[in-house]
Length: 243
Image (cartoon, rainbow, N blue to C red; front, top):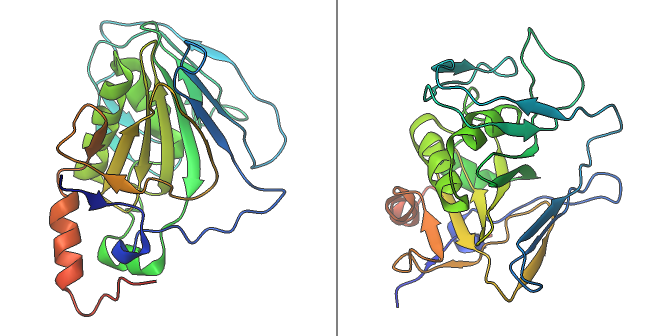
């Protein structure tokens, strides 16, 4: 069984983040230990008003999204599901940003995000993209267009691969059947695992996915470029991958 290491230091993608008691987002995912899929996350950034916002479904919505936060731009389907979000603060030029978490009318939930970091060696191999997708935009360009947790990983993953990510993040998707936990490890690479039905996990501000069996698509997914990039990084003597 062929396995690829994702978060190990040997690939230069291990987290170098040091959590503090004050600023330490924490995610909890619980497969089906009580028969339900459960996802929870706290926010560490500060204390201010939060909004609970309901976005109505549309069959003729905008086909282009441009972030008021960092200029990230992407195409959108015309049809969008009804969904909720919990954005920080107020609108920016009429746009809610940092939607963070929500549930759509297909009962798919998304939590974006658990912030993390990649060490300098990993970023040298595949740097972050300044105007790539970020936490500020993630929920609004993914959640209205997905019908399952796995589909959420696939949609966000395609955006990261094609347009890049501005940040390292952990993202949770759940539906009534399963939970998928996804990590964006560099500018264009990502990996995701299905949380086993009889397991739970507590996830701090760091990359925690250890091994990937990419032949097992029922339980593991990753960017199509991951294996190719890892091989290229390992052959590049200028990039010292060991921690």
